[in-house]
Image 1 (cartoon, rainbow, N blue to C red):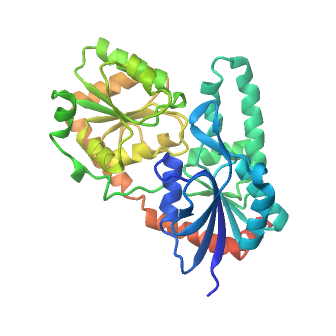
Image 2: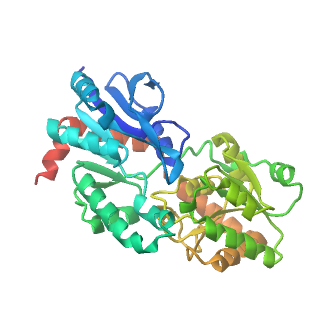
Image 3: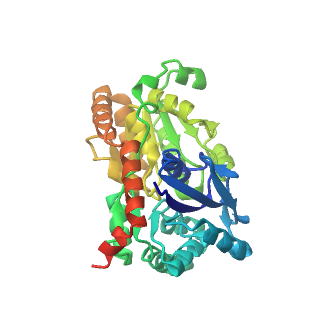
Length: 391
């Protein structure tokens, strides 16, 4: 049987780098080598991925976020095109509309190859943070980014988006709805489970028996950290006994430690440790409005942890306010502290949210999502989906 050949472009291919790469590897580790052959092209990654060759393109650190590197394919464009010609793919998978993504979509159009992309990162929402010291540029830069993303995604045959809100936003930009397909992310419900609860974990970490609020995220400014700081201040002013544990790392970690001196920073932890922390804490706090999906909210729910989150971004789609969690005005610290205080003092309310959250999170299965992806890859290889777009 002839294998379906896929060339997979991603600037970063390190499994635990962020939510986007974790999503990629959920698919990568499910590749059936008897049916598919993959070639990976990345800026940062290993020499082989799941046994398949991985070509590394020169990459450089992004000035506004030193935790990221961007690949520059033009530096090796001739040898890269030669390798692609030799591999002769049937389908092109592009992770990000970066310089590498632009190279990939251009190559696909020149060679008549179908393209699939997963909408991982809501870049437009980052602009407010990166240009906060030059607000007069924000609207202009946003319009240019939207224009570029519209042009990029309208060259893709299939775009997986993780939430209804993200799908609507792409369509508002002018991306063809025929190309957009709702494809929610999955979670490992065996790993993220109330069974991971350790009643001694939080007292051991904090040295007391106060209720514990967990914040888990990359510590970068676009995660609305300024609001987190104000929540921390307001909880202290209200004399509410609490511990704040922050799990994650990033360029803003030192600033967070200086600003929230009594919080406990555990750094970037493994999924196994994070699962125990979710299951053992009393409330989950998430202030980000820049998520396309927000895996951490779903992981917390699956772990039996009631959530208080920002009403913005893709993660807001998970929470039905007052039913399985609370959604707050994104920049209003008093809204968060009011809801956190309710959860930390009302066990019956917390129990309702826990039960509803567990029921909701059960519907997200990675095996089913991967089956959809590989079925679509085969259909793209046969040009069935491109034919549908033509009508």
